[in-house]
Image 1 (cartoon, rainbow, N blue to C red):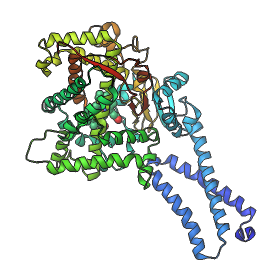
Image 2 (spheres, protein in one colour):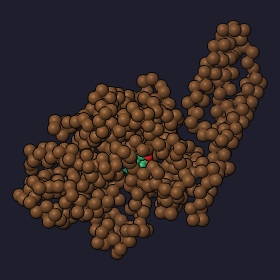
Image 3 (cartoon, rainbow, N blue to C red):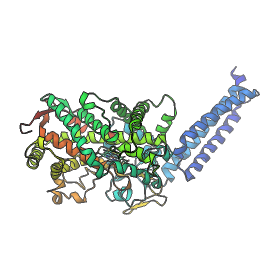
Image 4 (tube, rainbow, N blue to C red):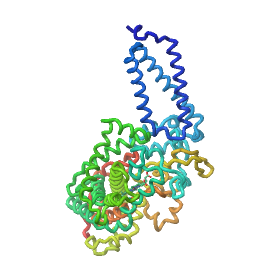
Length: 563
Ligand code: HEM
C-alpha cells in the first residue's frame, strides 16, 4: 500500500524538493526583509494563502487523478517543511547577525522573535518586573524584539514621544485593524489621519466640557459616599468599589447614561467583559498580527466578542436618544454630532465609531479606577499624608462636606501632589508604549537608532529609577511642591499621560474625577486598613500586562465627626 502511495516519489525527488524549497524559503525571507512595507501587516493574508495553496495543491491532484495522493501529499509536506526551514534559518541569521538593530544587546531569543515578549507578558503577569531584570542585565538600551528597543534614558522621552518627535505610533497599534478608517484614534498611526479625528475627542474632553461634567461627577461621588456610610466599619474591597465608581463616572460622562454600579453594588457585565478582553489582549499584543488573526477566526475571539457586543448595544441606545439640535453634554454625543454635521473629525465608518466607543470605556474607566484605588492605598499606608490632606480640606472648606465645592477643592494643590505621586509610582499604562522611528532613524545622545524600529521608554521603571528620583520607592507628595527643588523633581522623567500629539485625551477628566473623589472620601472618612490587611500583596503583586490589574485591598471607612 505504502509503495503504491509513494509511487513516483523517490528519495532523489525528496532531496531535490527539499533543497529547492529551502532555497525558496530563504529567498522569500530576503525579499520580505528588503521590502519597504511591514510584512507583519500581511501575515494573515500570507498564512491564508499558504493554507489555500497547500490544500488546493492536494485537491487539484486528486481531481486530476493522474498522480498518487500519498506521493503528492509527501511532496507538499516536504516542500513546506523545507520552505519553513529555509525561511526561519535565513530569518535567524538575519536577525542575529545582519539586522540594523544587531548592535543593541538583549536576550538572543528576544532578538529572534516577539513571542518571547508575549511569553514574559503571560508569565506571572509581572512584565515590568521582568523588564527591570533584563535592563539590569543588558543596560539602558535593550533589544526586546527583532526590531524593538526598550530605552531607559530620559533623553529619549521627548525624542520618541514629545511634540517635535519624528516617530509615529508603533506596529502594536494595528492590533484592531490595518485600516485607519476602521479604528478609534488610538489605532491611527498616520498623523495626517489622526489629527482631525482627535478634534472630536478634544471637544468632549475640553476644560469647557469639564464644567458640564463636574456636578455630575460630584453626584456620583455622593452615591459612593452614601454607600460607604451604609457600610461603616465593615471591611470593603477598595479595588472593587473604585472600579464601580470609575465605570459609573465613565457611563455618565461618555454616554449621559447611568451604569448604576454603585447604586446596586454590582458590576455591570461590561466590567467583567473589559477585564476578560484586556486579559486576553495583554500577552498577545506583543505580537501585533496575532489579535488580528484571532479576530479573523470564528470562535477564537472569545475574549473580544462580549465586550464588543455590550459596547455596540450602549452605543445603539445612545444613538436612539441623540438629539442633533442640542449642544452635546457627553463625549459620545460629540462624536455623533461630528458625524451628523459631516465634520472632518467624525468617525468615518461604523467600525471606527464602535472602536471609539470602546476606547472611551476602556481608556477612561480602568485608568481612573486604578489610580483612585492606588491613591487610597497610599493615603492609608501613609496616615500622615491623609491627616495633612484632611487638615488642608478643612481649612479650605471649614463648614465641612455640606459646603463642598470644586473651586475650593482646586485651591488644595496637595491633592494634585498626591495624584501625581501616585501616577509616578503606579502609572496605569505600565509598559513602554512603542513608537516607530522614521526611515532615517533618530539620534539619542551618541546612540543612533535605525529607521523603522519600535522604540519605547518603560514608564514604570524610569519613574522609579534612583538615578533620577530621590527616595524613588517612597510615596512623598511634597516632592511636587514644597520639596520640589530639594528632590530635583523638575529634572526627573514623569509622563504617565504620555506627551506630544498622542498624549492622553482624558487628562482633564482624570484630574477632575480624582480631585472630587479623593477630597470627598478624605473629608468624610478616616480610612484605614481592615484587620489582617497589610496592603503588601496589593502593592507588590498587581498584574502588569499592558494595563494594571489590581489585587483586592480591604479597607475600613469610619465617618469623621466633622463631616
Ligand atoms: C489617571 C488616568 C489616566 C491615565 C494615567 C491615562 C494615560 C494615558 C496614556 C499613557 C495614554 C497614551 C497611550 C498610548 O500612547 O498608547 C493615553 C491615551 C489616551 N487616553 Fe488616557 N489616561 C487616563 C485617563 C483617561 C480618561 C479618563 C480618558 C477618557 C476617555 C482617556 C482617554 C484616552 C484616549 C482617547 C487616549 C488615546 C490618545 C491617542 O491615542 O492619541 N484617558 N492615556
